[in-house]
Image (cartoon, rainbow, N blue to C red; front, top):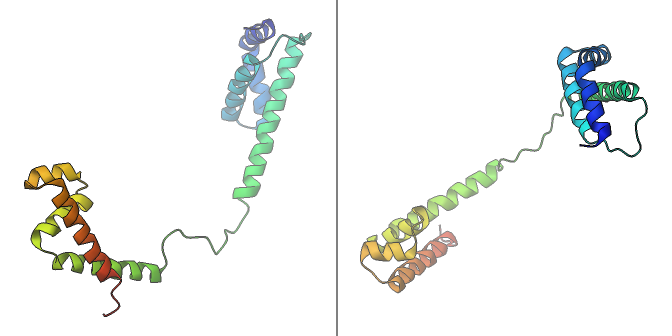
Length: 170
């Protein structure tokens, strides 16, 4: 640890209560003063030896004053931004619109109806792959089929669902 930082750390331990009272007078709060004192410790750990600090006590108290003042300014900015009155009436909403929800629901119903039209084994393979998220190899092992047979069934199911989804004959 640089000698400036070591000397300031020792001085901070000796002057801690005085520094805390100073910060409390500036910030108006004991909890803020404790935060400032903790921040002061972190700040002095980064101080290098060049240039050397002649009056370490004055430097430490000036640093505490600056940190407390910065905290007060930040609190005022926060108040001005977040506690200054009315909230905007129009706020962006990430939920889909009613129209998009209805379209999505209709598409889901079409896909579910298309799944009901599939032969039972093809539907089973599709559900295992797309809903249960099982690998093709595991589906093949469970059903005693080849991987290529599973791939063909999946392709058949996907083509059928896609055709029903884009079918405008309703």
